Image 1: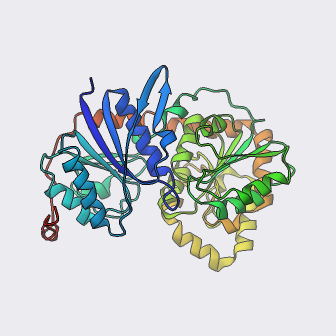
Image 2: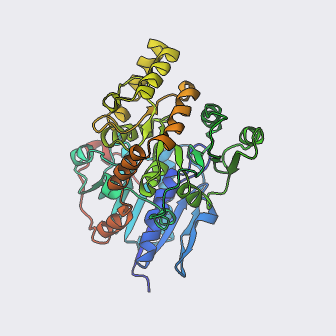
Image 3: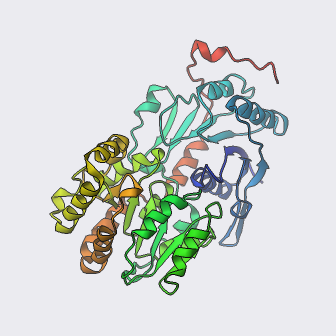
Length: 420
């Protein structure tokens, strides 16, 4: 008999992507494995991914559809109506993973939480106040100080808490194959504009097959047209359930920063990372520091000590094509992410997909076959950084989590519950 219950507030789909959903799903399945009952409240959540059957054990996440509210205050009010009406606050924790909620919304949940149910926030930016009993930031190497300054009682932050889904963990230990496909994926939303720029920069004469993996939220027409130009060398996948196995078989993964990159690290797959959204900038900090991927970055001499002629030439190509104004712009946008890659000279990355260079990619791919020791060292660093046990550590903490009053400002008390 289940002894605990949890409700997640999380969305997915076009404009949101799949990252929030997938990390909540990973946490939820570990909770279910320990006999929790779990509910997801949200929009655009893929029903086919809310259940899993592994080792003869069925895990099911219960779905409660949620309407869209333009104003976050209406959103949190309706969420509270569900907590108080359907569940009568008979819960062990509430987990929120959305950028929509601001400090007022989280403060509201603290004030009118009639049964003192602990609230946990999953966050990866630390750019807002989130008064709650706990915060989970699964980004490797993330500094917990911003959360500690907010007096959040429990802070689970960094690579020890990176959430890797069970389907990926089941594939760890596979032998690496340098003749496997190059897999290209930029996330679960409508990323076709950036994805096509990446695909067009992949040389046509490489020996490895190329697999493009995107979600159903991403328009297929342009991707399928690109594949059709060389159908024996290229193929595409739009089934998210097949993605883990495809990724585990890859010789090189070209990904965005975020959850998929950390899955790549868990499997130990050489990678090239493209940063193109603000909430992935911490990724470049990790890569620079740990030397775990190629991060295409036109502004920093991030791999200068690798003494790699082809790399230096590649960087020069980027800077020459971009020009100093564009270079400065990318430098300002990507500073936080860039910090991650430099300490251990990890990777090569680019902050703007318009600057992807086909000749540079060709040299990167050729190096897969000519310098296996280099790639093995990179893969070893990846797996030392992400061991895949983050969900276990998070649930260990949640199972002992208690309600602690968090400090509120005077302004936090102005919002009432007259609409309840």
